[in-house]
Image 1 (cartoon, rainbow, N blue to C red):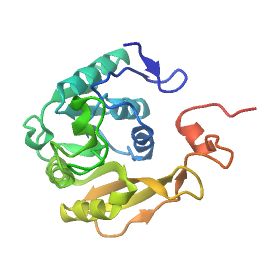
Image 2: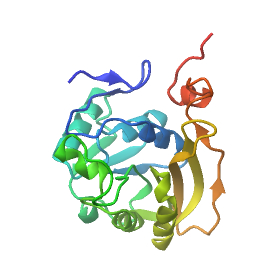
Image 3: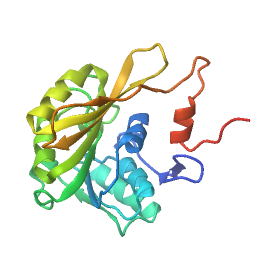
Image 4: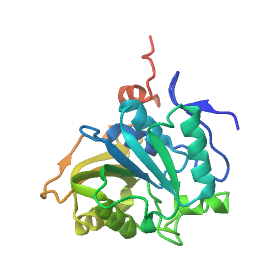
Length: 240
């Protein structure tokens, strides 16, 4: 499949019908997360590898392990890593993140994830049955993800994820119950007066309680055009 540029002269990506398409949520999460002091990162449920590839462009010296249970997704992520010349710092581990033996306890300073949005039996089914695990919690629940993240992060390590706004309360409770204390929270709205559709959250393992709620990220202005912040995130020049 022919690759496309995520933005002009930016990362090149390819995908296929058996891998979840690149979504705005992954791009926004990649921009939201703080990379200060991070040497080693894990991307759990990496899909096509878009999050890790963007993070690598932000911090080229960072080592990232990409994990996905889907052979098709893992193969796609490997191709995209090669396509962007990132083989020396990024590697793909195909397997179940819940039983990941390659990663040692406390190995990572940062873990990122764009997990399935819907509990088992809810949400719309994707066109390909091989993509169902990217949409629904068929192979990993939010609680199992949080348990794994807490095990793999070192003390003070950070975890960043995105999710649907309707599961925000559940997510914050689950994360806190696994010693992943939410520290930054940002809601994403399609328009200024629209209800939030997505949340972005960054947690600290073993952190003290107290979360900073940041201004909402608005995708479109009143005229239906991309907001200035979205254009900045996608590296688009300002219209003259």
